[in-house]
Length: 574
View 1 (tube, one colour):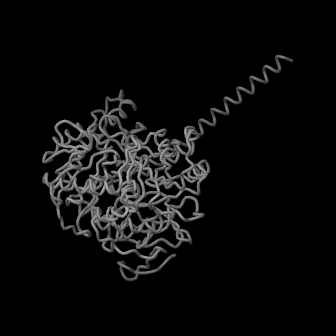
View 2: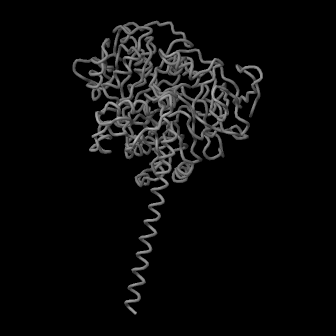
View 3: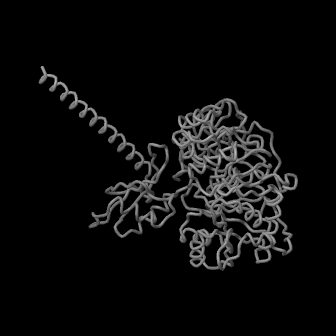
């Protein structure tokens, strides 16, 4: 449905505003721990969490009691309103209790990648001004080193056991008084995940209690969950997709969450079979495995009712192949950004025949515009109906802003409250959104964000590299991977592709690794110094076409040789 209006736009500029076909939902003005666990008493002995590796379960009553006791222990340790606590852990059954305990104690939680290097974690700790860390013993040395690099960390807790550090297991038995903290849901920050937005520089995304809780309410009409549903949490809780779809949403509605620390295909499939999981929220690489890997045939996956993919583009043939192999309805997709808490569009679970490739319809209380991509720089006009344009979103789920970066915030959210996503899309006559491409430069490797600027800055620290640029290129399996175009310094001809990839791999988390390298004579740049990535993408396209043509020519020559050989032998035999 298309509506016309002039909200927040200069007089005389026509604006096409897309609005949700669903009824508006009121803002949820509750702290996130109340918005999620406020119903825990009603669910009581219903199983909230299952450790998918051990089978140990936690009921809603136990989760509610544990998060309150941990909150009391945090407050007794000195955690107070306005503090930032870094949650540096893979998925565990303790993760939700720690998250809600920290927010109940008045802190904001900055969620950290468990594969971050000490330097990467230190950068996040420094930028967020974190004073507390909760980690797990296998990651303790990284957390300790990061704390040493940044300074100002009051205490490092562990979720399991480690000598010299207090355990969350003991905190859950604390007898300290429960803190009574006054929280302003519309102003106070509950979660502080880090996102690269449209600029390529990681920034703390300030998500308030209200924005996260309201987004959960917006999802209710399209992502129904309740007691009896079993959701498999293999995507990371530290990512806003996992935090919302795999932790907050199911725990708000009494579903059971089966928790896995990482994706291992056999463990993943065995958990679906053993725990009769009915709902899967995944990213495209997992869809690929479900569609093609032979191991899938060894497991009983008949409990599955649906699969929803998000976090990165999903190819239509792959989605269809996965649904057909599992005997399921068409795969659902969703769209959003960390800056949107995170959702703006979802294909409803009840939709019988969603058009292939769509990422869904607008959630309740959400508006969208599409900006004309051909408009002159400095001007703004909406795309014609049915045409492609940059996706703009407005709604109560929009972030408060980027921590300490008012200019970046202003560049992302205009004065009328529209979030400029940097993504290109089109809308059909029924209101289904199709994401075509990204305006922004961000690379999404298996759902994780990789900032080209970060890798370029690192490459330029190599003594043998004079210049470098990084873009995302697609492999045959549909994954986008970072490719570096590198200019060697004079006299450094011995530098190899393997050298470059090893240099980067030794200094970043695994998902950020450069996976392809091409040596070039120079990096194309504008007069301003900005890298002209489109020229690099065109170069990559031409190179791929050349390689494909050469392969075809080689195949033709080899076939001709084979045919001549056969003819020669036939003549010899006659």
